[in-house]
Amino acid sequence: MPFDPTCVDCWIFDLDNTLYPPSTRLFDQIDMRMGLFIQNLLGCDEIEARRVQKLYFHDHGTTLSGLMHFHATEPYDFLGFVHDIDMRPLAVAPRLADRLAALPGRKLLFTNGDDAYARRVLAALDLESSFEGIWDIHAMQYRPKPERSAYTGMIDAFGITPETAVFVEDMARNLSPAKALGMQTVWLDLATDWGDRAKDDAAIDVIADDIGKWLDHTLASLADPASLG
Image 1 (tube, rainbow, N blue to C red):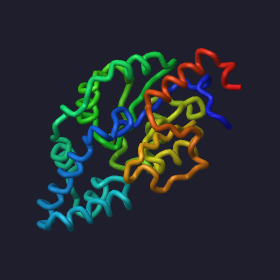
Image 2 (cartoon, rainbow, N blue to C red):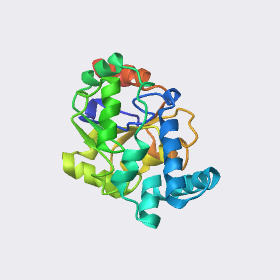
Image 3 (cartoon, one colour):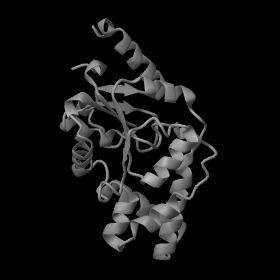
Image 4 (cartoon, helix red, strand yellow):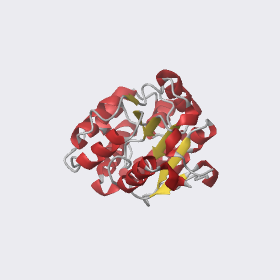
């Protein structure tokens, strides 16, 4: 079934590398600080820390989840440390704010980061008023995307009807649970290292390489539903 924006009343967006481009290299800062946290925790060198970091990310959804499972890491300590980064690479995004405001219905943020970090990013992008709510790693009880409970918890908390919701995300593997629950899905294929891992083509309704262009196309389709064919 082709993507149909006319039935959408809830627009759900990932945060990192979705609302801002990977070219900002913001996550490189976080990646570096995660490695440093693991070095300090385990007393290991940089190479071993990176191996552990990527192993936990791949097997547990986030590095934090692996650290909590194997090392009883306190999540607030970890998140506070790794998100202590420079936000200056982010630029205010007035056109993105305008496009989001033009979408009919609710807008939610769905992130494996934490609320405090998400709000700093939104402030740097001048998108603080663009979203009704944030579903973060604390709300997920540290069971991150793509864990099914992360999605069902958000659905229950915000009273979402999956069949009238769309989820926009840069990591393909995180779209499969949303699709299974009845949502429409949009994959932002930004050619990042992890973006296409565990990609399931059947779980993806739309592939885009630029969120602004996709929003422009979507808004045009909403203005002229006949163009959907």
